[in-house]
Image 1 (cartoon, one colour):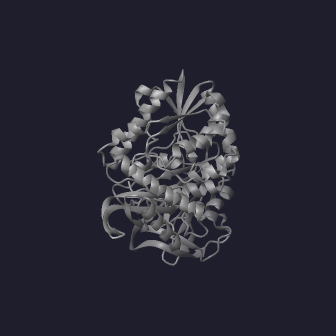
Image 2 (tube, one colour):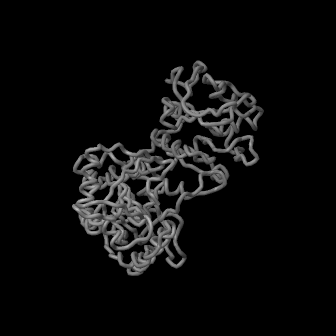
Image 3 (cartoon, helix red, strand yellow):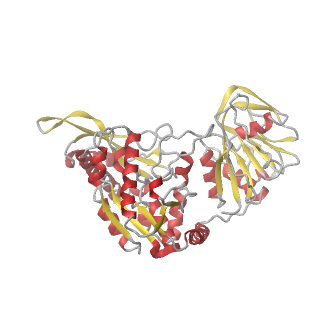
Length: 509
């Protein structure tokens, strides 16, 4: 991709959100750790320094090498970045008397500044820092203040360098997107040419050049990511794409056959492999979430390896990896630590001898859907909720048995079909049921029961990096609870999860 914006990650929880806001302006951007970014910056048109949980005054403060950036490329320093420029360039940063966190309003804006075009005084911004800039760096010029923060924004004369002590990327900064647009489009003059159609044209051309006449094998899951990856690859290499759909025994009810039927009309070469018994046998007695993930990943690769050997001269494995997978799987000093392993990131064992191709690696989930729409993929398929790679294994807390899988498949079917029949499915980003490792007392008829507890989960999100629980109607929850308890043998209690991400994650394991 040309005309990139480089975002340096110092570990802020908001870094990915900066990238999302930039992408919404139809501008391509990439996130790199502050201490490991490309040495060749010739294709970049601007740089953004992100925030950080660290203090610039601390011994462990991240120190980026800006020698190839500052004064050479337009640069916007956000929060930690703004304080870093000040502290190490002739200014002063000191601890605030009170932590500056939450909503604030601009009380002063310097006149005739392009950065604040279309932004009115009193505009709300979001603060998140315990230090504050007490003196500007050499050649610094104050651009904006709030009631409590004198140097809320500044620029450095003689450079195209701007700095702000608030987060324009979060929803609470009401004119944040406008400020980013002013900087990137009007000041840095970055072209707004990152569109779904442009991505498809460029990616298909790139795949043709990279893959030539090689054969590629792809694991289809029935989800949005692998489907869009398959259609992109099919446009590039046609019959040289071999798709394999593996049933790991942990799919939704009837999903194996339903997915195979779904692909029939898409012109894809798909083979279904039913290996459910093999996966469940390997998982027997295993309760640890990470161990479950690793077993599923290992067995999947073994099954895939067996199948790929039936295809002569296959050289590539295609994966539906998307950008949040990549970001969350990178852990360096400073940037966010890995919370859990991802089933489709991290390479392959040496014995597979396959090279990896990931056509969606740089896209967020909503961008994948827009690309899929430009490819003409059925809107119903593109609207499917995300489903975890390890399947229902991480929605069954504790060990996995065929009976537990049966219970959860039945419960999940009642929940998902209920969302669809009530017109709620498309208003939810992801939904599912979790089988808890506890039994509870109940009464059915005149008999005492001691059966399983189910937790229902429904969240709204854009890409899964953050999520809020959905306020489903009480009448709906009452109906679904009754249906589950009456129709699914082995369940006598249903609860609803009302936690958001963060601090919780979307999945329970």
